[in-house]
Image 1 (cartoon, rainbow, N blue to C red):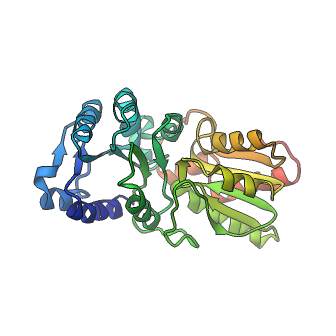
Image 2 (cartoon, helix red, strand yellow; image 1 turned 180 degrees about the horizontal axis):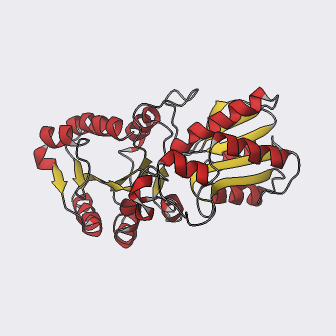
Length: 309
């Protein structure tokens, strides 16, 4: 997604001189087009994410629309207090681009595994939180939201080739996007792990079970009305996220279900404890039970009434 976002931001900056880009010594082979086209609007602040958030806050207060870029763990956590006290409390248009959600930087080790970024982002009132499923939706989300008032956290992936079947780039802030219709079990997902959710749905279909797949790419504002209307139609729902099960998508859906008294059984598929190993994204998905096969088995167990541990 990151190259698609970078190219789109070059286009947006061409028509909006308020747009700036800041990076914390990252983005080589990604942001050269922007830095060459708009050298006076590109700033590499070095390995200083907290300072970058402070600078972005000041520039936003002066009328600019600064985009700040770093690996998702660093973008969301190293400057968290500055994000809260700056653009959130002052409702300023700082756009945070956190790249590599979940295990996308798997080989880099635990410090680079972004497994809590969505949770800590979505609890902040006034911070829009968006997690596109593929690069086509990422572009649509960026175009639809870049000029909103207030700050935004975009969790973007590294894969610029995968296209989620049935999505066709659709994005609506605060709404769900259904990519597969079904009637027996509901799968709710977001971000790049959605490809595994689709694999699970295909496995269900091959075994005579009709599975719906819906994307919650807008985590805040949450699509509460859409979620409630979907949950009441299914006996079982799975949430699938490359994130800790506490705080993220599964927690948000649980809140909606509880607030509306929904009887749908909810199974949260995500990372349940601190990972014990490093490796590729596919290796870590397999280790954490987040492959399409794992999701399929979790759904079968729930449908049969077995307790999911």
